[in-house]
Image (cartoon, rainbow, N blue to C red; front, top):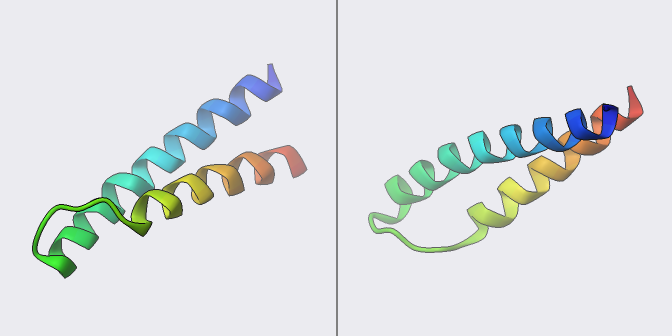
Length: 55
């Protein structure tokens, strides 16, 4: 049960970071592209998963 919560919380946090990062990157670049914001969102999801595991 705890592991399911970790996965869902990580995905929720990572996807919300992705939405923010894509919008920020678009404003910065001026065009849509795939870049480091996807890596940043994946890393945020992994960190959230790890943090919940530590608590």
